[in-house]
Amino acid sequence: MLGDYYDPETGVVYSSVPAVQAGTFPPELKANLDRNAPGFVDLVNSAIGVGESVFDASLRLMTSMQMSKAQRDLVQVNVERAKRGERPIDISPFTGIPVNIGMTPGTQQLVTYAGIALIGLVLLNMARRK
Image (cartoon, rainbow, N blue to C red):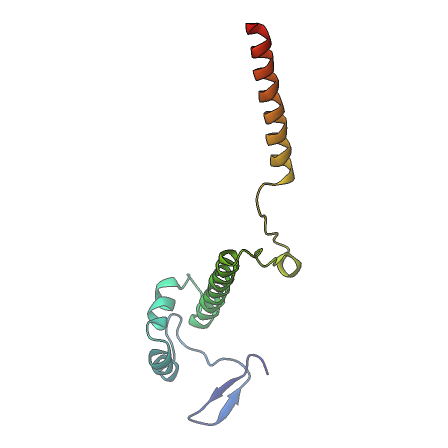
């Protein structure tokens, strides 16, 4: 189940994470993290909030790191697509965040009206000189 913790030394499955002092990792977990993700323990300890457990801080950091990696991967894919002259991947159906390419319709309208006004001023200026 989600939230269960298996203690490999005793073979016991706990229904929740065993209590540890705030800001410290259980020694087995710290050793495993140091071996598999060097520097992660130090990162968690530097980012831990007041009253936050190391497990909550770890989960928050892992979620943030996963989102950052996904964003970097998406940017890299879109850069490769742009090099090939293709449109970027539209993620708005999945996230609700639109991908805007070029000018928004409002900006296009403003540029059009500014261009018409500029042409009008040029024509008016030319008519006055004659």
